[in-house]
Image 1 (tube, rainbow, N blue to C red):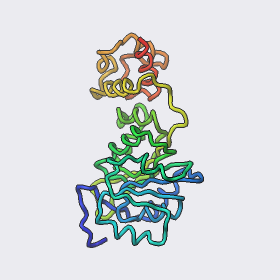
Image 2: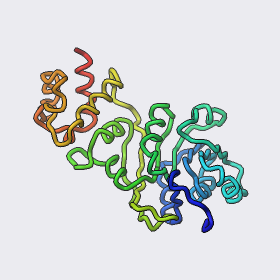
Image 3: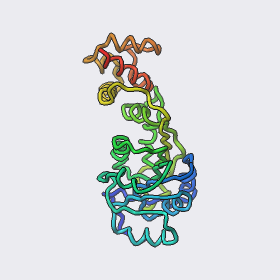
Image 4: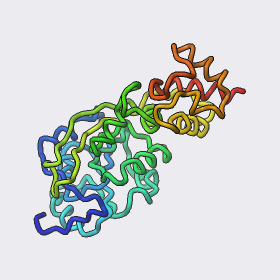
Length: 265
């Protein structure tokens, strides 16, 4: 790939570290009759290991220039399909309906600039995934996997942790890529929760969480002064908090409880 014209606009930093690749492939709790979605296979370093280890792999690649490279690398295998299109524009449920599978995984080295839009699409489209193992920018991974009370904890953390148990697998040096990016990366595992907490109104919950983190380091009283603070304080008191606490102290289930109580009134 020495002569390849890497496009910065597509976030093309191809992974070359085989140890990291094997760690990514082995991380999911792999079950039988599986289907894997890979977003942005690039030159196929991860793809080749996926087709070796999983029953069926669907890859979404936006850069048609990589067609011959990927097809040559995967020429010994038949258990894959490459869709040369933008994952964000696809009807993924329609793409995968022709396959029989019991377990669906997303395993990918995601382009930094579309990490959040991709994850949000997966959630909004209600893809029936078991888990995701993705490599993303380290700073973003720290935010996604942070715990209440940490400085990285925020709106996106609460939202994602409603759906997933998120853990960090490993950090990845910028030297593990061609070309070398300016920042380090991390691999995270996002395992779909077996049962989601009941929400009366998901859109209301989403707005509540967004408003709760409107001003960094402000109290809940300051950020949610347009809401019924008596109801909020009543819920918080059950968990040992008050409206003078800060939003970054609260776990996702507390926001769910607040949202449901506010919706009841």
